[in-house]
Length: 162
Image (cartoon, rainbow, N blue to C red; front, side):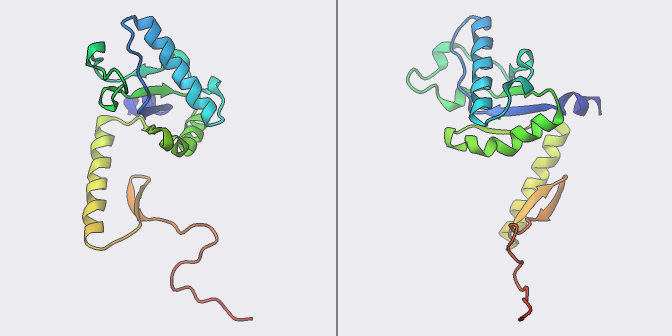
């Protein structure tokens, strides 16, 4: 439970370019600049992110392992961002789909147990979709049917004639 509390304002962001500098201070400055850039792209307040808590996850690979021309995606470690409050985190997640054109994605920071359970739910969705079910999503740790878009009626709705 304590682990979930420490992660509740965190988001893990994938696909952000990583600095190739050997100096840790320069890498941190680069990551903070990347965070500010993402926040401005989403029209969110950059002050809602705690800058000194932005950290790369995983083991850093040596700079000669990076592709010279492209900074290959396989060598981009995820970046954990910590927000000042839950509202800011949810606003970021709500708008983060706008970053797909830059090949940047994000998800809430989850405990290993939560990740394993979500993976199990995802596998169940794949099996059920292979059996013909459609529009399944995970909401509040349960598999449910996707809601129809606002203003559209579910299939089979009969409208009264006036």
